[in-house]
Length: 243
Ligand code: ZN
Image (cartoon, rainbow, N blue to C red; front, side):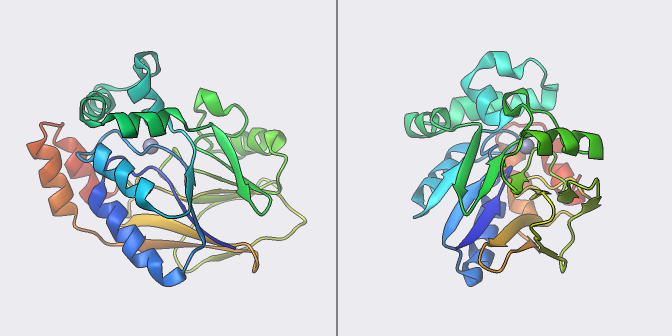
C-alpha cells in the first residue's frame, strides 16, 4: 500500500487543500495524520471536517488537539499558542470535538509501522524528538522497524545508529531491515524549518521508500484569515518565514 502521511495541519485550510491536491497524483491508498489538527490558524473546524471527508484516513492525537479538549493540557503553552487553542475551542462543533476525543496517542496503520504525534517513548508526555539521544529513547519504545512522528514541524530522518538529518525534497529514504527508522514528516500548516512551503510525505510500503514533498500555497489568504479572526498577527507572519 501507499500512504500519504501528514502532520500538524493547525487549522490552515489553504495548506491542507494544497497538500491534498498535490498528493492526488501519487494515488495513495490511505491517509494518516499525526495530530494537531487545530490550534494557531483560523479554520480548525473546516480542517477537521475536510479530514473526515477523506475515504480511508486515520489519525492520532496531538498536543494542541488535547489542549482544546482539556484546559489542563494548556498550562505549558505560550500566550500565542493559548490564543490559538482558545479560538479553536470556540470554533469547533460537536462532530469535530467527538472526532478529536476519539483519537489515540499511537497507532499501527498497517504494513508494520507505527505513528505518534510526539516521541513514541511516552506519547502522552509530548516529548520532542530532536537530538540522537531523544531518538534513541523513541527507538527503545518502538516495537516496529519504522515510525512516523510530527510535533517539531521540522522534517527529519533518524536511524537507530544515531544518524539524524533533515529530510529534504528530492531525497528518497530507502528503508532497510538492518536499521530502525523514525521519520518526522514536518508540518502541513506551520513549517518551522525555514521553508514556508507546506509538507507531506509518501510512504510506499511495497517499494520500501519514503519521500517528502513541499508545495506552495496561498499564504496571503491564510494570514488574512488569521488577522480577521482576531488571532495574534505573528501567527500569520511566521507562515511567510516558515519559522
Ligand atoms: Zn504542532
